[in-house]
Length: 505
Image (tube, one colour):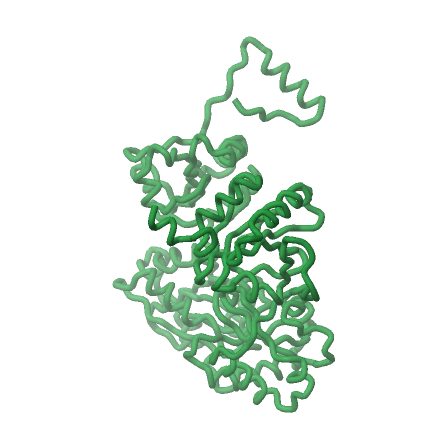
């Protein structure tokens, strides 16, 4: 059994006394154990529940178990929300049905419909997240303040308009299901007030409305978009409407959830100083209108425009080299993959016409003419030692060279494991120096930006970037010289004979 007592000496003594009592018996688990035979009947009958898909051998699952049990007990006492588990190594059909590829995987079910659990893994995290998830995400628009906030919203709103209907209407049920997915992306509201809906959104039938923040509605731009909802509508159709309608010509990056909207797409980011005091933010409005004029020229071309507060975007701006330029407003591009582009310093310093300069910059991006910008240490003037030192500015040239296989270590200077690897890594580089098509490289991931194709969550992280443009392969084996050599031989495209030798075998 897992130890669940205190962690100081008093707690440990008290717990051991309890366990030493001959009458003591472990409390019965309140977590439901589901199988393929019982799953649908139980899950479909619950308004909301949490299910953990686990593997008995999984260390993370074992660590989660006491917290999950504690959360289950507390939730049954506070607000009956059941927690359950599924052994995914036994119930393989269920794991496949719900796309389980790692352990533990937690999913929220509402009357049998699954969504991702994005909360923490402590008992408090699970309890708090599930209590929030229990209530509908949408709030009814009642009272003068709520109506004013909807008529002139300060941030993007997803509004359900149901004139004369009730929460029993099938159209409302669809909207409620839709907004359950929006807890971390959109503010959602609904109204049954026919007069208010007619006045505000010009609708007299059930509709889905995406309303833009007033400050970010450009001249001659519609302040909202409307999609009628019928009994034949589907939640997926509503979701697609929101996805394609949630960005005005030049929107706001700095609201509570707007980063999730804009980080998922390619964006032109205009960085300026925003005023959060009372009254109209004249500076933001001035640059928003100018940006919107450019945005109109690129509508439908897969690029979106957004206004960012420069005081909150230091990391990206430094990576784009847009800081300390003496310009009131600057701009760059960040793609959905996190790749960044920015104008040359000379272009910004000599900028006389913002609209013309921004237009040319976006055209160059769409034509593939812009170099990638990354946070980077200075490029070494010369290499010393057997391991090639890579920085952000040299990464593409060295690591993504299609004629070379490159083993790249991402490290941190303070990392003890990295220091322990260093002599072995140097030995590896010395051992394979006769392979002209192979490079052994390293990069300080704290001083240089790591491209999005490389998932670095800890140090050291090692990848092989194969020649011929193949996708990088992460190394997860032992950090010994011979094991690293074998990994290279097993995955290289050219070095050691590469794929040609493996194909013969």
